[in-house]
Amino acid sequence: MRDKQWFNGKNVLVIGLAKSGMAAAKVLKRLGARVTVNEAKDLNGSQEEKELQELGIRLLSGGHPLNIVDEGVDYVVKNPGIRYDTPIVKAAVDRNLPVVTEIELADIVCEGEIAAITGSNGKTTTTMLVYEMLQSSSVPSYVAGNIGKVACEVVANVQSNEVMVTEVSSFQLKGTETFHPRTAVLLNIFDAHLDYHGSREDYERSKAKIIANMGPEDTVVYNAEDPVVVEMVEHSRANLIPFSLNGRTKNGAYIENGCFCYQGEQILPVHKAALPGRHNQENMLAAMAAAVSHGAALAAVEDVLLHFDGVPHRLQFIGSFFNREVYNDSKSTNILSTQKAVEAFQAPVVLLAGGLDRGNSFDDLIPSLKHVKAAVFYGETKGKLGEAAMAAGVSEWTKTETLEEAVREAFQFSGEKDVLLLSPACASWDQFKTFEERGHRFIQAVENIQLSHLKTDTS
Image (tube, rainbow, N blue to C red; front, side, top):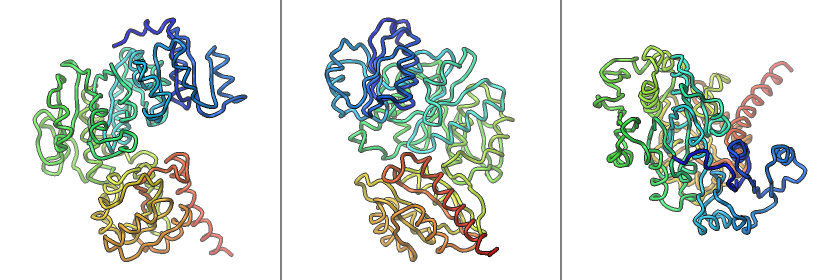
C-alpha cells in the first residue's frame, strides 16, 4: 500500500467533481497534497467553487484541457463514471501517471478495516445487510460507497477498531492498484457495463481487483455456484468462505433443509426471512459470512434476516394501493436484475420497464417476461422491450413515453392481489439524472393515482 505520507507536497489532479471528487480533494488536501480539481461543467461562481477556494484547492472548470497533465502532475484521481477513453484520462495514462478512483485513496487513509462488496447484482442489499448485522452485534461500523456517502467522505471517522462496509463497483475497482480490504465479497459476475469496459474480459479483470492484494490474514466470501467467481478466487491466498443455495459448503454459508445455515449451525428457516426471492437468499448468505468474519453474533444475524425489509429502490415495498402490491426496483439497471426481480414473486406481475438505450437487445429477458401478466414500457428502449414482450407471448403490453404515463397504464392492466413492479432493466439517464430520482418519481406517480381516486370518491 502506498504510504499516505507520500502525498505530502505532491501535485494531485482530481478529474471530475461530484461527491467522490469533492471528498477525494478534501482528503488529499489534509494529506498535504497540492490539489487541482478539473470539472467539465462550468462551476464559475458556484458554491462548489467557493468551498474549494476556501480550502485552498485550485479549480479548473468548463472543460478538460489536456495540458493539465503536463503541469508536473504526480497522481490522478478520477471520478469512477469518467471513461478511460476520455481524452484527458487517456493523456494521463499515456504519460504513465497513476490514475485511480477515490476508493483507492480511502483505503490508503483508512485506520480501520474495510469490508468490500462487489458483484453484478445485489451489492447494495448485501452491503446494508452486513452493516445492519454488525450494528446489531455492537461492532462499530460505517457504511459507504455507491450507497450514499462516498468512502473518502466516511473514512475520516473510521477508527482502528471499526469497520467500513463499502459497496464497490467495477468502475471503482478498475481504478485501483493497492486496494486491500480485510474482507471481500464476490456475489456474481454477469454481463454488465460493457459499454464502459469495452469487453467482458476487462469487466472481469476489474471485478477481480477486489481480491488482488489480499493475503492469508484476509477473508474472501464468494458465490460457490458462479463459475466465473469460483475461477477468480481459485488462486487467492486469502481465507475462502463460500456460500451456496444448494446445500452444505465446507466452512461456508448455505441453505439446507429449508434453513439458512452457517458452518454447520442452523440460523433461520428461509420462509421467515423478510426479503423475497432467491437472489436475496444469496445476498443474505453472503452478508452472513462477511458479517461473522468481522465479529457479528449469529443471534444478531438471525434478527436482521427476520426484520430487514430492503433498501430504497431495490425491490422496495411501497405499499398496497387498491389491493395491488407496489414495488420500486429502480436500481435494477440491467437485464439480470430485472429477471431476478420478476422471479421473486408468486403473485401475477405487471412490469414497468424502460430507460436509456445502450445498444443491447432484450432477448435475455424473454424467459422472464413469459411469467408476467402484463407489461408497460417507456423511454428510449420501449420499442426493443416491446419486441421482447411479443417474442415472450405477453398478452397485454403497451408503450408510453414517460414513466408517469406507464404507471397509469399499469394500474389499468392490473387486478386485485397483483404486483405492480418497476424494474427498468435499463439505466435512468434518458429521462432522469439518477435511478434514485426515477424511483422517487415512480412513488410520486403511484401516490398521485391514489389521490386522484380519493378526490373522485369524495366529489
